[in-house]
Length: 356
Image (cartoon, rainbow, N blue to C red):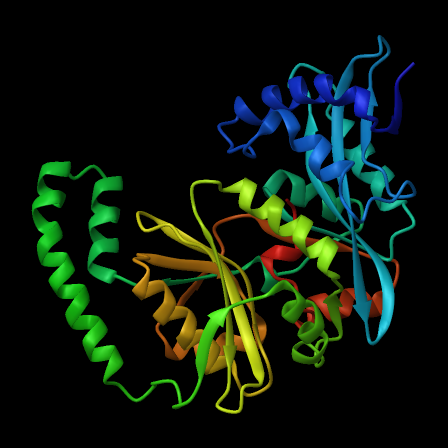
């Protein structure tokens, strides 16, 4: 008899087999250290909650033919703690012959006790299932911003990807370095310099934990961290891209007060992904300028991240462009006010608060 039940540690080897079949054959990227990934994110999380388990779908012979992961995440809505969860790794065996496996699994998760359920790496098929079950797409948080840091070098990368021989692009690289240096010099002399006295330094975890409620105080929905949970989460984030250092920088005003911070993977040869970007009221421009400066000084070619609705104007003025060509951010809640916070863009939902 077919059944859906809670995912247990002893199921991990069989779920890994399913994962390889469902994800690798589709050409999708997989987490680093895959053999330990499922234990790490589903059983070792400081937010682990037996009432919010992940699920497997068994066929009549007892074979695992489907899986959906659930990652509990505490959040705060208008000063009140709410139980949030992130749905991830929804998959069904290609050979299952049952098109409703994913639907049944996600329906089981929707019926859980969480106040709000999120997903931020969904493809088009997952989005259709999600909306078919009554969930919603969050268009604002599905947008990505991109900003070339070294435009000329980025253009060479684009040419290589589109088939221009490396011999040609390599010969043009010295010219691209000169062009990027000129662009940087012109930008430094422009009107949008950071006000004097603002400084950047390494971001201690305790500062992020203690200052986030203040800096994100105007958001109706925001994450809640303590040092232990944040340390665990950042260890998972680093393991996700072990070849790219995670830069964590804090910005202070001339009086020494914290006005914001940013965390991003540094990839000098490709796209540097920003996973967390937060600025206090009136500080969006200066924090974003410090991000651009840090990326330039450390060799980044391109910055990219999830749209932060409160920074759209500052990003636009700094020649960012916005697009929706990747995964969707989705939400489900039986409380309309929580959904409205996400639909309206008044929530703080960085990449850090998503699927890992």
